[in-house]
Length: 400
Ligand SMILES: Cc1ncc(COP(=O)(O)O)c(C=O)c1O
Image 1 (tube, helix red, strand yellow):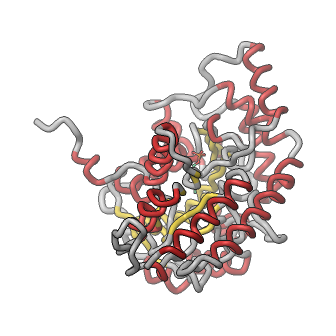
Image 2: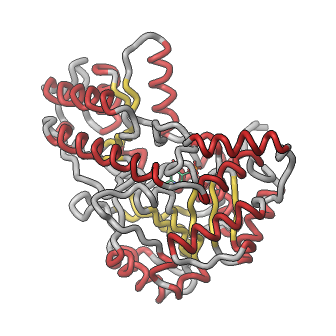
């Protein structure tokens, strides 16, 4: 009898983690590699947040907690939703998990029956389709175009909805494109959703705070109160608070869904780390000014990438509204030959040859359901970023 479950055949490991691991291995072997694959800020967790964790340890907050979050953290989250999103969520409508990733996974596991469809605009975060598949559902990718800013149109959304649609997953600002819906663009989508009461909305707002050029972030339940009863508003502390390793994500939503998520959590991981929960109370309730300081640096890096990549032969790089990614097209390089003599037939080839020739690790667009393109995470030291962009220019210039 085969050891592994059939459900595993439906999914693959995360491509972004694979690239990061490969870059790390090359570095360990002595190669000069610049890794632009990882989706995490290079900034350290702010000192006040670390201190809150240390104090929590010293107070002995080291035991099991409520399955889906301590009351203090739920209060801080409720306050955050009210303050920043004008959304009212009671403690019983809030869940805390081991990263936003776990909350999404639990929500899909709690709601998907075999054959249920989940609409996912592409390019998408690598984990959405695989999580849907693992839950027994069918991911329905809706392609978007670079010329339309990688945004799904209301017409495309309406065309994708069927009787079997369970969820729409919206991620704005987006991983991997950095693209973010304006209020008007989001309203056009929520207007469609209002007409289809059987469709639930999962808004992944994890990059909410990372927006530039006076862009104003909005979320579905805020824009359209009629969707409140079927929206899961997801967020977390990983990106804005530089807390990827602390593993805290959270969501607000209707009570029956929040309860179901807690049941799954209770039979799998139990509560997220008690210490990280106390650190997250400080993150959400404490000073927020470092976010603007980080954003100033992120914006400079975004502009640097966009400008330098657009000077690379065969590359076209749009300027996104947020997150810390750019998603340039490498269509102009396909069909050419790499310095190794290998042909570039796809964006997979592009990223492999780029890593071999110049030691720059990026992630192929095909991993995000779109291409030929690649994703750069600019949450990395500015000097390294400039050096990496120079190497990409040289690589593209050397293609025959
Ligand atoms: C779009 C998106 N959603 C959710 C997550 C999950 O983050 P975490 O589990 O660290 O909260 C990530 C992390 O890369 C992401 O890019």
